[in-house]
Image (cartoon, rainbow, N blue to C red; front, side):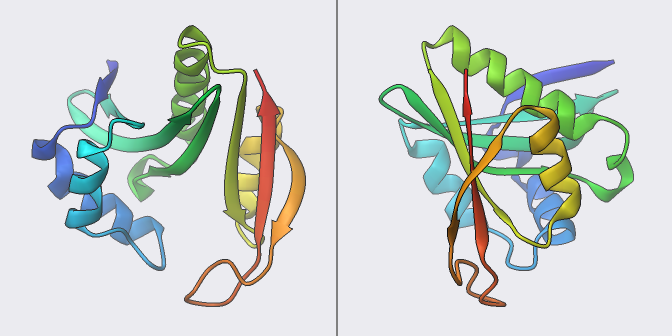
Length: 145
């Protein structure tokens, strides 16, 4: 059974595990705690039979949503969980009157680029040397809702 729930502090151990598996420079517990206190932030987890499979975060600024991060545990990758998370937050944003979404993604993250293209995000720019660890560029993507 698949469930979508708001991220809570009690979920952070699993979220940090996912972060460490998915990102070269993972967010810290304190970063997530700050996000949980941020009134503009919204974080959602996806559970599969009671186990957190992934999460997505976004910020709401006026009529725009910015996806801060999306990650699926390696055990659940390639099984549609990223698409389910993205679909869920797109619907959630529409309900809240959001008219567009944006995100940044590593140029080398081919699977994420494929996912975002499937959901009608388009490339709209480059942030040169955006990622501190490798100085890799970020592709800025945009989608109208």
